[in-house]
Length: 84
Image (cartoon, rainbow, N blue to C red; front, top):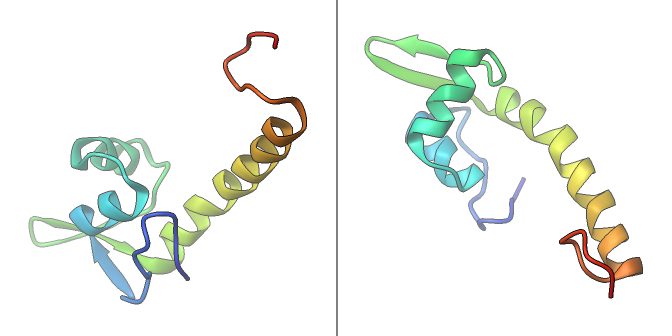
């Protein structure tokens, strides 16, 4: 599976740094997602690890929302809440 950043999700288990690169967010933001329970993860020693399947599950509803948002933008133009 490829994503917007062009990185392939090939590893079965990823580090927090790898996940943050895939999601194009900061490492601290990725850590917040893990700590809040929004993104499933486990610790291997002192390092957080995220299974590829858990990352894909986290991304799936967000991909669907972005697809719908893109359709609306294509149909109506701007996405900043202002009228044309």
